[in-house]
Length: 244
Image (tube, rainbow, N blue to C red; front, side, top):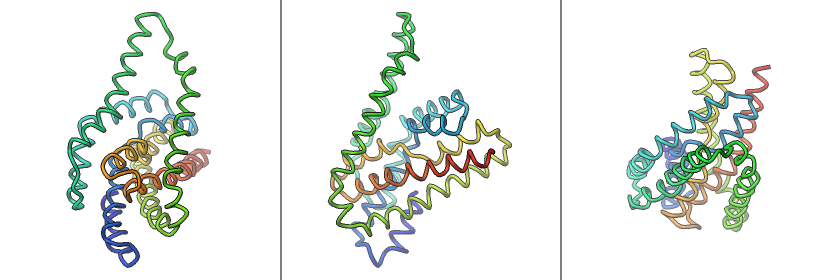
């Protein structure tokens, strides 16, 4: 994502985008690229009829990797892109948005097992609230950026192009790797999708924390949300069709 963002905004789109704005957009795309998916992949997995146990392991590994690697990798790539950021904000964002929810989930599961409660039943009761919270968050994000989206449609298109290139590019690489390894559909499909999708909630939160709500970096992450859902649905359709 860092390389694709640099190529498009420092080379291809340089005549139309001011250097300061380009730097912000690249920063937002980096924050998207270094945040692997840990939530929506469950939805994609259901849509492609993938192995839920494999997907759970994938998500667990991503969570553990992000706890120790998200802040260093984001700081490194942002630094290479000449974007100065406070380390403390990255670390605290990781703690708040990754570590604490993970610990809360582990504690809840341990409590239910100790008291004879059902984890599956709790999940079913909470699912409508989780979906509602996600939709509400997305609506708020687009609401805060509505003026920019309406006033600068060309900027939205320019940001979306490298995001599309990166997303489809990662999927193609993952798909080739899955075929080379001879993975069955129920493993290959979620493997390709989790490599392609991003933890956009984390990226948006970190971008706002680092650069502000109305920054170019925050706008780039919001465009990432706009791009990801239809792109992922198109990939789900293709995986299901190719299986048939």
